[in-house]
Image (cartoon, rainbow, N blue to C red; front, side):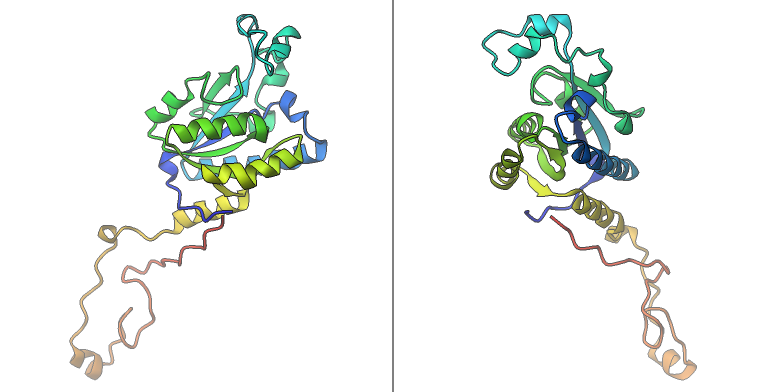
Length: 251
């Protein structure tokens, strides 16, 4: 995994894509539960840092089915069998990851999260330039969205343990050989570390109060004055705040 640069939550969106009961059913139950647990933590982290959470789900109306041509090998069978109706509870976002007020929610009718939605416009309107990708499946919505978003010049992060695919070999090939050319690859623990590093980053120089001037040497020598940050005193910031060293970034 590559070394991921720091995140600016104000300009970052987490894409929660196709976490719907009908799509989750493609995965083994044990994998499904673990994945949902990691996503709950990631969403909580992003919300706590003031980032945007954007949900993408797949679902079709009667008109959507009718518009799918027989030449579309992926979606013609869906239209033929009237699958994934947009009002079916199994196409709603999973209840454990339910959207909240202020989140973005879009419905798509093809693989990618951007191509058949207004998601790009809504992200741009919020000043979003960085996307964190999570979704099912790695070879479907994740692959299509990564390729499209890279062409739209977003900075991309793919969460290796928040994407999944029914085919483990395909999943591994994409994460190891395809995505790294377009995105930073990290896991959910690595994202948590990046977000903590942003929170602990020292204030900009202009925001840090200037230290008190040094006392005259004779005052220190004769009066035995021990000042914070000066000879004879403990090494602390002039305004008594602690500035921890930023944590190491994990990729």
